[in-house]
Length: 367
Image (cartoon, rainbow, N blue to C red; front, side):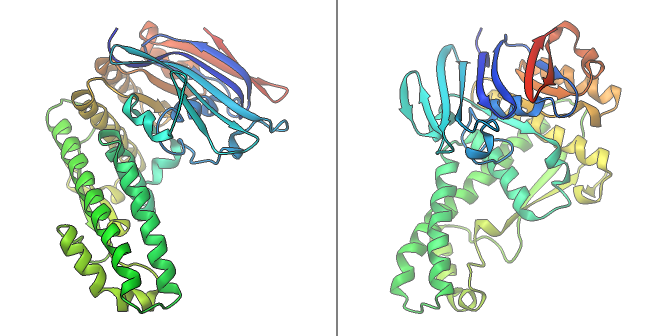
């Protein structure tokens, strides 16, 4: 069938999984088991089939199974828009991750051309009340899902900014040292800002076009200090004008790295940061679903969804509504929970697995 889904996944010496093999179909995957059994490790493995550092943002060394620390390997058979790709991802003795698609070595960013993966994990529950960095990361993952090249822009911008910040800390005042770096930052910064705004427009359109049981979040891109210059030329000028102030601070004070994401519970007109814990969770679920709907239009298939312990924070009605929306999208959603009862509303619309742990080794069995 057309779409985006895994039919096979293997893990070798990854986290708590010494050796695991899953054969699945395009339906949602419901995974339950006790805390610490290795459920999140399993969906973390799936997250690595997309660009970036995965849902835990861990280093390759941290993902190696202990005490062996021999390195680890993941393989997946990915069905993507009428094509099937064999993907291998591995790390040897803590070294950088390596990727091979259909037998050819490639960069991690190439995964973005064939796969779209979104996730919601408990660590994101405090998104609206913690610092702006987490919200920027959330927004950039959202943007990258629509525009895989956004990752290149962010990496290039960060590299140029680090070099500029080094000059600032060393109190270098010669303008010639700054010109080329500020040109790179202006080019990439304008690209980042445009990509973020395009992604927010996609999310807005997806929310407006759908009837959903989850609250709509109005999103706005703001800046922690001043406004983002309107284009590349204006940003280049702004960087030059800000050099003296940046020299005093020892860092760059304007640009997309200072942006923030402001959210409002639309029906109530209440800022997301002031909503109850349950409302904040519902807003996050709403955004992930809107992102998925937008991608279904843009990419041609719904993304793979990774929802860690999401059911435990929703009442029965919201849980049933979430499952109905996932099945309506036709998304392969990998979901974890501590008990089988959390997935009762799914019935045979999903495939169910139990993860247990014995002698520090995770085991997976299909119900």
